[in-house]
Length: 227
Image (cartoon, rainbow, N blue to C red; front, side, top):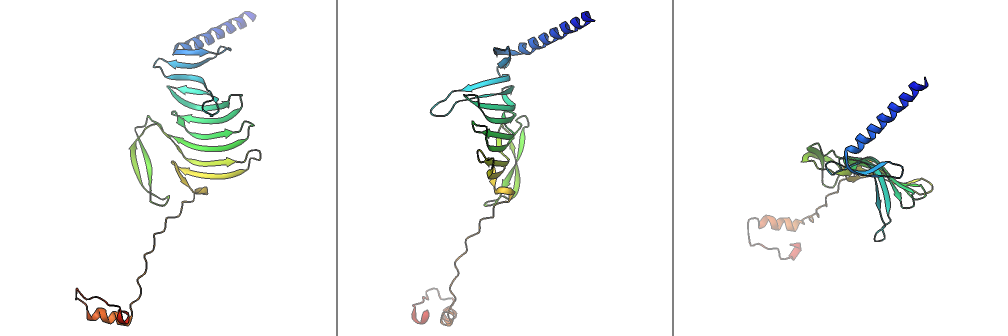
């Protein structure tokens, strides 16, 4: 029995070793961590591939941070986590096709949630996309337009802003393909057209003058008796 178990363990180790070697062989270049993990790799096409850890140092007063997540063929994919340079989690972002997609969450260094965003990422492998055309001065969709698709992300869905410490929602916004609409999805009211000034009513004397001089091109009112 012991011999069988030993053989099983050896086979499993060989399998895992072959799997790791094959995975690394698919990468043109990579970095090994102190624990032996493979990170920051490039595939044969020179595209970022697999797990990456990226450090951005402080510059021009902007705080530095580190982000970690997965690249697929040079594009961010799935969950990415951002940390400040002291190791505190400050954001959890979702990516698809290299652009933000789905729920994004942002925190203070104390761990308080301060903002949630909803984004929609477009698949660049689909050659065309349909976008809505809105009416002037309102959020009513009047038409749709087919355009050539490129990689992009748009604000789409509900955004929430929280009060640090209490977690109370202090502000909400609703977006439809990057277009801000009123909270709760209520379309903004159409802009009212300016009213034209009303003409003053004619006096009996003015009506009599108009009737008498109808068709006369050079007839001019001189102001007497209200004319």
